[in-house]
Image (tube, rainbow, N blue to C red; front, side, top):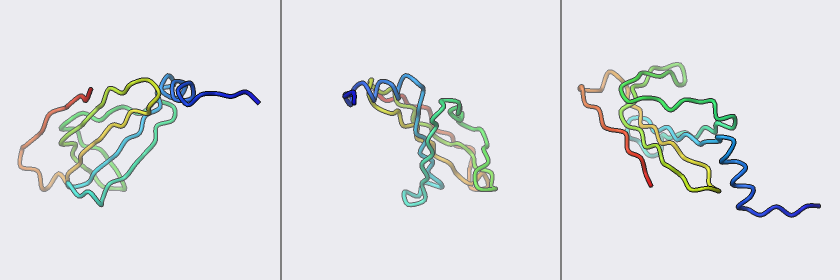
Length: 97
């Protein structure tokens, strides 16, 4: 059995484009959901766009798209609000180091 270091395993995951999306609904910390993108095919939602989740429409109000070092799975945080509760305010995209 070949021994593979955690760094090598992490690098293999990161090089495939694997990402983890964390969706937070209406700013409620408890009402968040995690979704893994194992193929790297999911697009990061853009601010102001409306996406469907759980048979409802949600407006993307904030996205934190981190730049992660090798060996870790990047986490994309997406903040969603009910579009009927938005008052024309959008926040920016922030890239973490």
